[in-house]
Image: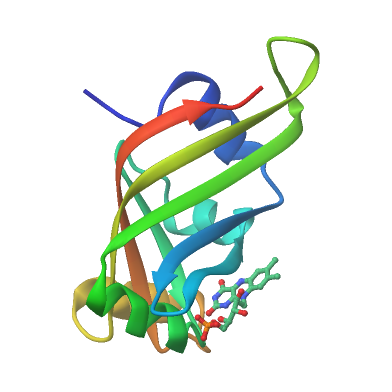
Amino acid sequence: MAMIENACRQTLEATEYVTIVTQGEAGPHLVATWGDYLRKLGIGDDTLIVPVGYLRETEANLRRDSRVQVLAASRQVQGTHGPGQGCLLTGVAEILIDGDLVARVKEQFPWARGAMVIRVESAKTQL
Ligand SMILES: Cc1cc2nc3c(=O)[nH]c(=O)nc-3n(C[C@H](O)[C@H](O)[C@H](O)COP(=O)(O)O)c2cc1C
């Protein structure tokens, strides 16, 4: 069963940016990527791909603990109580620095040094 569907897919199709949280030794670590970057690389049934420019601390965190949480939101998507929906995705991620996928990411984003692949294991609306 696809994890990214219905309101969560609509939210990812509209969100301006998403936040991505990893767990560091000192606590949570928050970074972001633009929604249009995710859309350009293709939002799969269960995967998101992020062009990696920096994300050095995130990379170190993922080596210790691959769990991530991602939050997307858009006023353009209807929520239960009115305009605005948010979606919390949880899953695991890794940063790749070579291979076919990275070559594809570099074609679209020449500044990228790699690709973060997020495998979504659950998706839950927030509004
Ligand atoms: C809206 C927004 C979009 C961003 N998009 C990217 C991105 O696509 N790739 C990237 O490497 N960093 C992106 N950044 C910067 C990261 O959030 C982060 O600050 C930087 O990569 C350093 O990561 P680190 O703290 O894990 O080393 C973005 C920041 C913002 C605020």
